[in-house]
Amino acid sequence: MRRLYLQVYLAFLSILVVFAVLSGALWFFLHDDDDGRRAFEGVAEILGKALPSPDRPVAELEQALARLHMQFGIDLKLSRADGEPIAAAGEPIGALPTEGWQHRGRRNWTLSLRLPDGRLLTARHRHPRGPLLLWTLGLLALATAIGAYPLARRVTRRLERLQARVEQLGSGQLSARVAIEGKDEVAELACSFNHAAERIERLVNVQRSMLASASHELRSPLTRIRMAIELLAGEERPELRAQIARDVAELDDLIDELLLAARLETIDTPRSSEGVNLLALTAEEGARVDGSVTGVSVRVKGDPRMLRRMVRNLFDNAQRHGHGMLIEATVEPLDGGGARLLVEDQGPGVPEEERERIFEPFYRPAGMREGTDGGVGLGLALVRQIARHHHGEACCLERVGGGTRLEITLGTNDVEASGANG
Image (cartoon, rainbow, N blue to C red; front, side, top):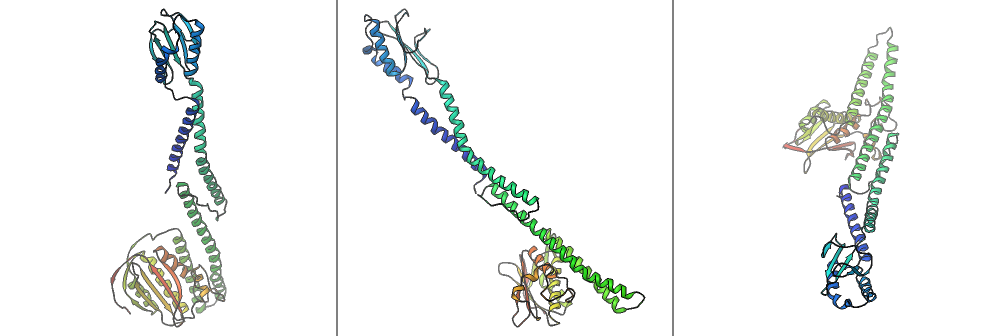
């Protein structure tokens, strides 16, 4: 994965490379390759032939020095043995305290050479530091600007887009998302933002839907209770008292399931986890509705109360829609770990287009009014929530011979033993 720090590091390395290339090119085009010592050796070789003898006219000496000056690009001065100047070429050279080689910097040097005839020849090479330094600093600034701008602009542009999406989310646009670009830390930040925004949108939508549906669901039993209380005024009506008790129990169940659904939306994994014998738990709940439970003893890891609530809701749903027919449940292990719970009823079944929607909170098939089936529309929604919190899933399938088959898969398990249990 390309990290942001690696991109910055490579960007600065590229800046240095660009700077080196530009500096080398400038050095190549603005300067020759002669070093000070090479110039000194060349002068030493041709001095005997190039310089006229001491008895020649000064004009001839100056012409010879001028040719050397043009050839080597150095300042020259010819003096007598006592130091009195005779001729010169190039920039004036002051008196030197000693003979020999004086070096000041890589390309600045001065040479004083005593000729065989006693004359003193002084040569000086000067390299202007100021312009080259300015050129160097300018090239460094240019290389830094060229190398750093694309990276800086790319990173800041992505951060600007992320900031805009954060502001949209904060203003209430829950569908705001950021395009994932690259694989660095900024991309990971954008991915985390998208996951957070998606979860926030889902939670808000679920809460909105749940509140709207809960308000609608609570209205029916409250209306019935109000009417029953009015009818009870001054009378003993056992049947009305029983109806009131049922409506109150329905409200209790609704509130209980609303609280559980809201709690499941705020957590990702069960708060308590321990080994649960799924077959034994299913047999206990099946006995409440005279159901037939068979299968393999499978131990799953999870929250015992949540798993019991899930199995109970499955049996209650099968009893509600099975018209009193036998309810069958089967527990079996899954290949590679996990467990499967099948609960089947012999009712009218669920149309294929509604098999996914029955897991939505407060969903009821068309034509079914509130209170007619004894449920509040949260049972199967809780079943799916609990299954997903245990690394599983819930789905509705068609039962061979008619009816409904609900299949629940759960996560990692340890198989205790095999055998049928009826």
